[in-house]
Length: 637
Image 1 (cartoon, rainbow, N blue to C red):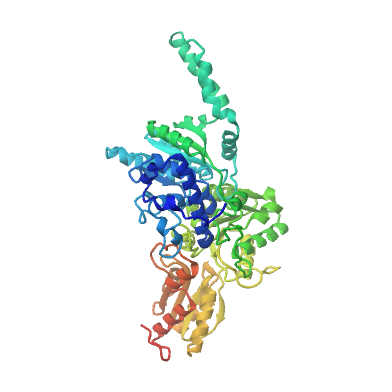
Image 2 (image 1 turned 60 degrees about the horizontal axis):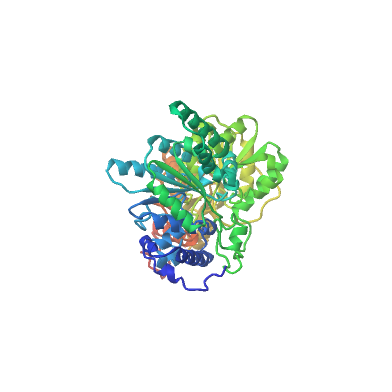
């Protein structure tokens, strides 16, 4: 596939989905090729979700060809496959700004377009939202159509089945498109994946209904009694030949499987589905990464990818040492070598969480549960009750989905489950749905939970070692970036609830957690150059706090500045302020630096950290202001 070699003339003419209906199927095929060129060329520069979008080009074209958006409502589950939709709904000329600060989002955003019906970013929500819209439509006496596009990976989550069950009960007019590509991010796992694979691969299933009808038409219907027997025979044969009856038993009309890259066939099936009353499920099978050989060969690598060379698919070198994720992956493997009770759990993210080496070395102790974070946490609780030492590696933003299980199934029973909270803090280009900015607030309030955050590679390894030896629930949060310092070969336990004083000074105290510790150290250097001596404390723990250390230094300096890569509401700074107030140190001034009460949009980590004042320069300037100082020759407003 050549990228950027031709002008996307057809695509430039598409101002809204209705323009597609002026094209014949051959022109739509050419348009599909142009769309793939634009997506590859753009994501090569900006990074993004390449493979999922290449897989739904024809599917998206057919949906917009048959349905009348924005009057008809199309909801994209997860939303990381919505680039084609954005290109067809008036955003082609802004597409170069994809995932850039101030540019268009990589996910559906109602604020961005009337065609983005529902904001998505986490999986398995589309059917629930679509059913809600269908109920609202009927109560208002309107007649538009509602479509939910959900992947087979997202279908592994319980919420999707809850919604399918309810939709089948209500019998509202609703179309669910099951985009079956055998992948979520990693290849799908579980009984459902095997079931869909049988539907996908055996042509007998696709011919089943026609063959049954042909057979039954040869049987003479003599009276109602025989008719009932014939119906029972028909049902029995369908169960033998057509496993799609699973969806029909839920109350859906099942159509498929359908080739998801055949535009005329997709248009025909969607037209049939549009005319069918009640809930309909169209099973479409597609190829993730379709049309771009590097993505077809490595769909998991190109699911969400950084900048790369469009002509070869070679990823741009980032340089530097290992990431926090890589340090976690190496450490948990070594811990498992030394303790056979250590097991690892992920929710469809073995590569993203750094657990691929663990899975290779300990396949019998590795568990990928699919997109099912709730199940992952309670599974770990059961394992812990059985004497194992489970490590649950889940991104901060996805761990939110299992909050009830953290409280009731882990912490209430004080079970020794270790949460490796990856992508904590500002994640960057994926935007508001993926920033890991709430975990401190929702974890530190739960009894029995220990919450810690490392400042470098060595501290991450030591904290994992400590967490596995605690004998109670523990969370270690770490960011999506390079980990400073070497990875230790041996570990030292981190005393629980003990902070570390890195620098002493009398004029102010900088108390930092995790990624903000290097920022605090650099800010202290800048302040020292201005003759301002500050103390820097690496808190290490958000819970429990080192109350003695923090109280003593706060009382001495009278000014405490807390630093965290997290929302201020209920976060680390709040914990420090609460503790000092409880200890009668209300005269100490506490200034919290972190993220404000907002959802942080997409953009690079560096730009977002600077925007919200979480840089050494901004911290130093803030301390100068608080102390009433001024840099020589500089006017600070």
